[in-house]
Every structure is written in structure tokens, then in C-alpha cells.
Amino acid sequence: MEEGHLIVTYNTNSEYQQIDHFDVEDGHLIAFYKEGEEMAKVDLGQVVGPQGPAGAKGATGAQGPKGDHSEQGPQGPQGPQGPAGAKGATGAQGPKGDTGAQGPQGARGATGATGPAGKDGISPTFSIEGGHLYADYDNPYAPE
Image (tube, rainbow, N blue to C red; front, side, top):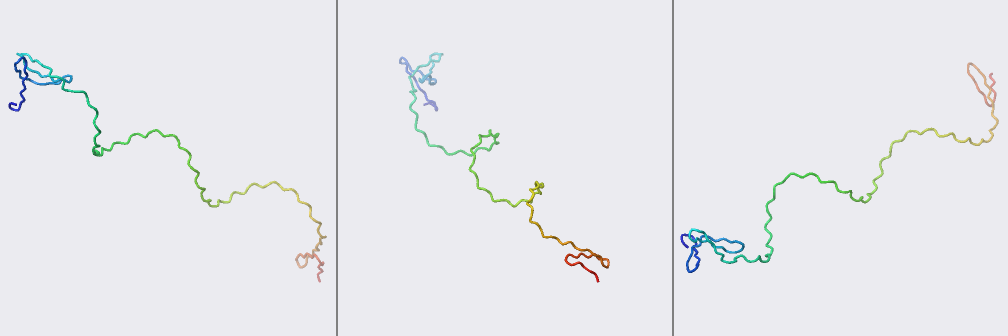
């Protein structure tokens, strides 16, 4: 290492070449070096193997902070009508209502049976005396 730089050399035909830089192409390590005025490269072999199996799931991280409150979206469509509920209990009887209007007169009833014969009646006797009218049913009145 010189002044914080890694110096790597590559031996070709008993000559050492200073590597300019490395790169990975299609899983192979490629070393770049100057050969005269031209840049040359050499494949140093495969350095990336096949992908291994997936690792075990890690622990769940802590819950993040609560996000900002956003506006409420539009109301969704109305869903289908649900089933009818059970019948509720009967409520208490209400207060007595007002008296209704009188109904129309009913049809005339049938004539009743004839009653028994009455006693013979007494005809009164009328008289005027001193400007007064007198009716006598039992005994005719005789003024003095």
C-alpha cells in the first residue's frame, strides 16, 4: 500500500504489470492494466456464485410514527337490505280518545204490539167562577 492506495501487480510472461482497476462482469473479476499505450484486461475467474437459499425471516421492527390525517373519502354505495328484526314487545295502551260526532238517525223500528185496553176514562166538568177556570174529575163542582 502506498499513500493509502492498494498497488496490485499481475504477472504475465514473467513480467509484472501494475493493475489500473478491477471490475466484475457477468460474475467474473476483471483486472484492467496498461499494455503499452493501450488498456488491456484479464479475466481472473468467476467470483460470484449461484444465489443461496433464502434466509430466515428477521424480527418485526418497531411500529412507525402515526401518519398525517387525510380527508375522508367519498361515501361508498349502499349495501343490500338486511333481514327483518324480531318483533318487539307491544306498547302500553294509549289514553282514551275524544267522544266522536253523533251518528245519523237509524231506520224506523217495527211497530210494537198493541197494549191492553185501558179503563174507562172520566170526562171532567169545567166551570168558571170569579174569573177562574175549574176542572172537576170526580165530583162536579157546584158553586154556592
